[in-house]
Image (spheres, one colour):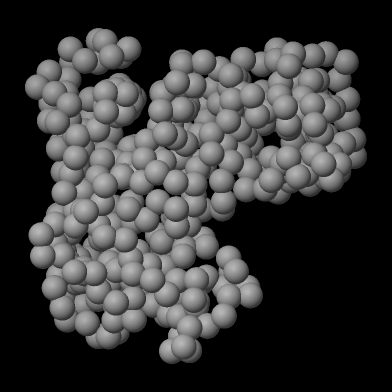
Length: 386
């Protein structure tokens, strides 16, 4: 697997993943971590893999083609779906989300396609369903692998004909939307097992994006750390400004079976428990410090000789370069489009634009300046194609 050059700055020595839980060693300023990567909404752009994802987003977003996003739980599939919507041809249209695992099997058809009054018991009013609610925008079907098998032919028909037929109605309604689906399951294996239709799989996977797990892009972890510290500082009115290098090393060495979502939860806990405006190893969740989360990925992993850290994570964290580096033109174009879209949707209100993007106002101002938008935002708003 190809990784970026992550050579450390001069004098950097990785700490042991089993560092003293009360470490008081060298501290890293939050500002230094925050500037180590660009961010697009909740996506941290630091690894080559994420840049590949964003390249796919940039290539697919102008078209209303159906897109299948795959990856483990917690990798950020909905963020990618929202990026496709925001950069697509109808960014001001609705973005409707449905987790297919929440469908009630007896009512699933009605939930998706709607129903007319009296179509079944308790159908006292007409319902549009998720497809018609997303008309003119994007319908995001999360956990598509959980879709009931008997409903899959009807979904395929709607995808191919761009129309839906409500339960109890003889009339079909045209829908103009982009369908984005996501799954953490192996749909090809499900096709072989007969639990997912092959024709629907081939139709959905024609344009596909894969998001790698966090353990395969560890070079992005410090930037995620900075992002989440900023988020939880605001949420809890905290002022964490530093984190120890030993804590960073522990976070980078952990396997993260829950991916970015689990990392977010770990940083949330650390920010709450932190004292003196700094995070140290003792503020981190016990399973992260001990590395026991690896058992979720490999239940048969044998413990290391010390009895604490599983062999699967008994290694040093990757050496991290906290310096920034220039991004390619394509990525710059994606970020600039997103910044301009956010200003369009908020009518130039930068506070609201920062909230929309999920970044602090200082980060937004820095990005606006970097991409020349701060100089004349009105000129750029008149040229949304960039």
